[in-house]
Structures are given as C-alpha cells and as structure tokens.
Length: 41
Image (cartoon, rainbow, N blue to C red):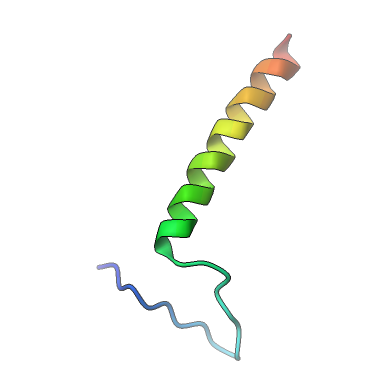
C-alpha cells in the first residue's frame, strides 16, 4: 500500500514526493546505462 504522504521520524524531511522519486530513479538508471556503455568502450 502506497500513501501520498511520507512520514519521517526525528524531524527528517523528504526532499521529493513519489512522482519526483520515480522520475529521479528513471533518470538515474538511464544515466547509469549510458555511462556503463561509455566505460565499456
């Protein structure tokens, strides 16, 4: 079950929501794939 609100203990703050997290994950995976291809050459 995924809830839109994320609670973090001890006054911690979440820098981004679920949509931003998904977008960041996609960009990070694409960047990792491109870098790995460049390194393999």
